[in-house]
Amino acid sequence: MIIFKNVTKFYPPNVHALKHVSLNIKAGEFVSIVGRSGAGKSTLAKLLIAEEKPTDGEIIVGDWDIAKINANTAPQLRRQIGVVFQDFKLLPQKTVYENVAFALEVCGEPNHRIHEVVPAILKLVGLEDKINRYPRQISGGEQQRAVIARALAHRPKILLADEPTGNLDALHTRQIMDLLLKINEFGTTIMLVTHNREIVNSLRRRVITLDKGMLTSDQEGGKYFI
Image (cartoon, rainbow, N blue to C red; front, side, top):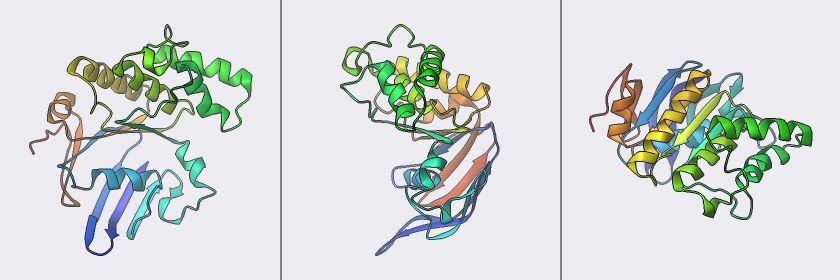
C-alpha cells in the first residue's frame, strides 16, 4: 500500500529533513509515526500527500509514484488519502453538514450522492445530532470528529492523522483515538503522526520512530520511549 524506498528530503542550504528512509506499510495497518520535534514526521506526511517531493528515493502509494506525480493528478491521489490536522480547518460559516458536503461538492459529486453519504459519515463519527451546528457551537473534540468525517467523505483507503489530538484534553483525545481505531477496523489504513507517548503506548500497534531525519526503530506492538 505505502512504500518508501531510500527516501531523502533535503532543504537548502543544509537541512536533511529525511535521510535514506525505507519502510513498507500494508493495507489495513494502524501505524504510529513518532519522534521529537524536527525528527522528520511532518516532512514524511507532506511527502505522502505529494505536498512535497523527495530529493531522492521512491514513494509508492498504491499505483501512484509520488516522485513523478504532477499538479494535475495530485488531487486524484489526495482523494485516496484523507488528512486530519491538529488545527481543525473547518469553514466557520458552514454547518457541520455543509463542511463535510463541501469536500464532495468541490469534486463535482451529484446532490443525491452527497445527501446519501454525508449523514452516514456523520453518524459514523457520532455527530448525527450536530449536523446543523456551526463549528463555534460544538466542542473541540466534536470539531475534530467533523474534520475526520470530512476526511472520510471520499472513502479514502488511507487516513493520515497529523497530531490530531494536539489541541484536545484527555477525554476528547481518547474519543478521537477510539474513533480512529473504529475506522481502522473497517479496513482503512491509519497513519498517526504524533509525539504523544501515552497515546502510542496505549495503542500497542506498530510504531515507527524517526530521529534527526533517520528511521531509528520499527516495531510491531512497540512502544515510544523518547
